[in-house]
Amino acid sequence: MDKIDSSAYNHTITLVERKSFVTSGVKKIENFDDTQFLMDTVMGFLLVKGEGLELVKLDTIQGNVSIKGTIMSMTYLDESSKHEKESSLFNRLFR
Image (cartoon, rainbow, N blue to C red):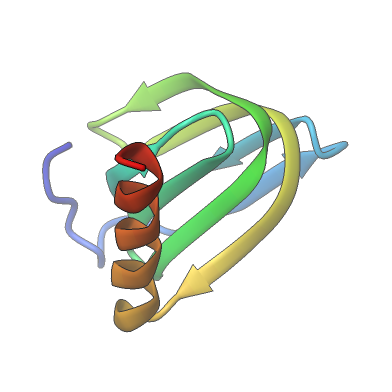
């Protein structure tokens, strides 16, 4: 995704019955699989965890992302936590 001017977009989250997740203000999706999405938003890194997660819609112009599945948690990460999560994902892939 292209870089988004953080002053031009608001960051919102909509969660419907823990099955449908929509967010705006996403600058980049760092990585994702069926259990987690790590996104760089205009408000910092956001980690969404769940089960059976699927990317439904990605709008790179507006910075909107839609995900379906069972959402278990949403957490904003600081920079050091982001690198730890990426490292653990990388380690899980190459066990």
